[in-house]
Length: 325
Image (cartoon, rainbow, N blue to C red; front, side):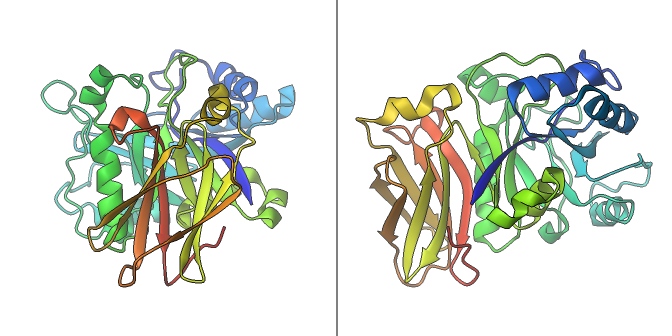
């Protein structure tokens, strides 16, 4: 199992960012993002420039071509897009036809950004106001947007807690949606700990193009959002089995938990919640799960279940199609 970091929401001077394409790609390489999606607002003009920078400067970052379609009814992220299309025919009360149009024009993974961001009249278009009738038309939700930081004031503007809860509710209802984060880079981001995205890949996927592998992981719901812990889960012999990788030293998180047991919260499709203190140093942990529940979402907290204490989330397990760790 391989945990591949990816940054999936970023901008340059090709739209409203302050970093040039070259500066953004070098930032990604410097910070070890591994995979970066270029999602400028309503344009794909930076894609070839980014690929040329990677080639000419010998960067180790892989590029996902993408775009952020900035509408009055919400911001749609389309990964895999090569060319921008018109959205003048978008009907916010029935947007499924427009999403199909995106897919027909090359979009491999479609999601929406910061769905509970402060909206009209202060930030028109930032809140997701489309009426989705078929959630299967989407592939992912940006459950954490960290462009405004991670403090309580920023949370009131961005609404990440509501976005994470929306994702959990939808996947527990049976919809195939991945959870991701977005730095939403417009300028060089502050060097502070925040939620980041990892794609969970099989060992044989390491030989593939990393950008393709990340999109594939999104489509299979094999992503997690984390402040450091790398964790995955599956069901084996009737137990929920956690697989933990302590190789990531993101802001020294793993050195902080040698004497403290983080709290794992499990929520199932019957509306029940279970909590367990776990030893983060263990590579594998088996936990009993109740009969009658088929779908589970996991959150890992630092000591208590306040949202500010969240360490890791976005992990989904289904009994019928268990993705074993």
